[in-house]
Image (cartoon, helix red, strand yellow):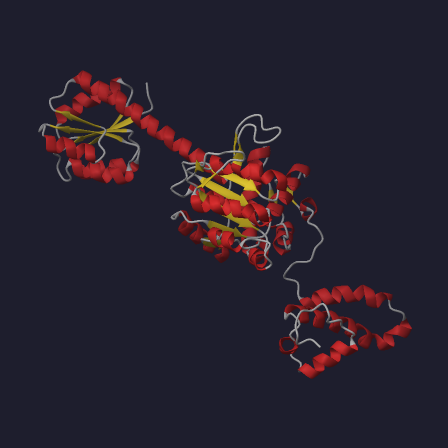
Length: 479
C-alpha cells in the first residue's frame, strides 16, 4: 500500500477503467478527468504524484496540459499516452518534461514498470526538495530577518538585488544587527546556494594565525604542520566566503587577500603550486571602514574590491516598530526549544522593550528573552522578568538628559553657592559644547560659529574666557 495519488486524464472510458483498476490494486488513489481543462485544474491542486495524460482530449490537448504543468506541478511524474506513435509527439513530450511516453494499446506489464519508476522518481524529487529546504534553513538559521518597518523592507529589496548578482558585497551595521544572517540569506538565494557558505571572523582569529586560517598550509611548511590543511578560501570554492569584521583584518595580510580575490588563485603557506578558486566574497564590519581607509589602517584598493554593493543594516533603535514582531518570534522559538506552555509579555514589559535603546540590537533582545523564559515560571513575563538594564532610551530629549544630571547636583549645592548657580552651571554647559563643535569642524572657527549660531568674535571671546585649549584641534584658523 502507498500514500500516492494518480491522475488519469482521458476521454476513453475503457482506458480509464484499465488504469484505475491497475492503480487501485497497487494502493494508489485515483483522480479522473475527461478533458484538458479539468486535468490542468487537478494538477494545479498538487495532490497527484503521478499523472497519465492522453494527447488527444477535449479542450486542451495532453501536450498543452503537460506544458502548463511544468510551471506549477514540478513534482508530478507525467506519463503521456497516445494512439498515434510518432517521433514528433514523442520528442515534444519528452522535451516538455514528460517522465515517460506510452502508446495505445499498451502492455500492462510495461505500464506497471512505468508506474513504479514514476513514483520512485516523484519520491526522489520530494526528498531532494526537503533536503534543499533543510539546507537553506541551516544556512539561514532558524530565523528570518524579521520586520515590517520601512528600514527592513529596504533591506529585503537590497538582498534580492544582491542575490541576483555575483558581485562582492559589503554589509555595514552595528554589533547584533544580523550581518551574518543577511550574508547567509544572500548566499541561500543566489545561484551559489548549492555550494558552501564559509565564514571567518577576523576579530576572533589571532593575528598570527589568520594567514593559515585563510590560505591553509602545506605539510612541513612550519613546525607543527604535520599534514596539509585547506584554508577558508579554498573551502569556499564554488560557494561564498563571508569575511566577518573585515575591519580587523591585519593590514599586512590585506594585500595577499586582495591578490587572491583578483587573480582567483593563491598559494598555501609553504606551497609552490597555485590553488585556483571560484568564490564570491561577502564582507561585513561594524567599524567605520571609510575612516579606516582615510587613516591608512585599511587598504583602499581592497575596500573598493569588496564594496561592489553596500548594504547598511539599521540598528534596532531605528526600527522600534519591529520589536513586537521580534518578541513574538523569539518567544515562539524558545517555546519550541524549551517546551512547556506558550509565553507572552505583559503590556508594561512590551512597552519597556519598545522604549529601551537596545545598544546590543537584535542579539541583545534575543538574549534578554531567552534569559527571561529560562528563569521565570510565569506564563506572562513581567518587567521584572525581562530585567532590562537601566539605561535611557535613545528617544529621550536632550532637556531630559540635562535635567536628570543637574537634579542631584543642585540637591547637593549649599545655600551660599546657589546665588551664583546660573553662571556657575552655564560655564560648564558652554565649555563642552564649544569644544565638541570645534572638534567636529576640525578647529574651523568660522564653521563652528555658524553651527553655534553666534558670530566669530563672540566665539573667540568664549574660547578665551572658558580657557579652552585649542592646540590639539587641527586647523590653521584656530588662533
